[in-house]
Image (cartoon, rainbow, N blue to C red):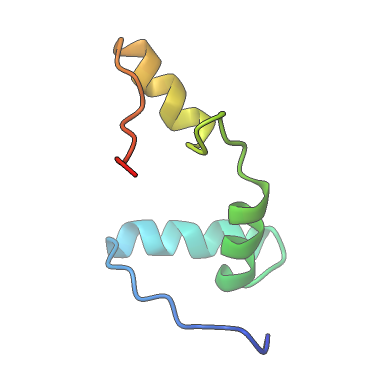
Length: 69
């Protein structure tokens, strides 16, 4: 286990959790490791938004929703 590991406590559907775990298993890794790899490798647009979400917003003629900062 990683020294800096924390427990993720996100509420998701049982179906989504099972699908995520199955994808991780087929990829030869734990769900936690898969999540780390996914977060590290996920392609982002210039605003730091995952491309697949940015593309969906563009298809609806909406810009990505950015937090005021």
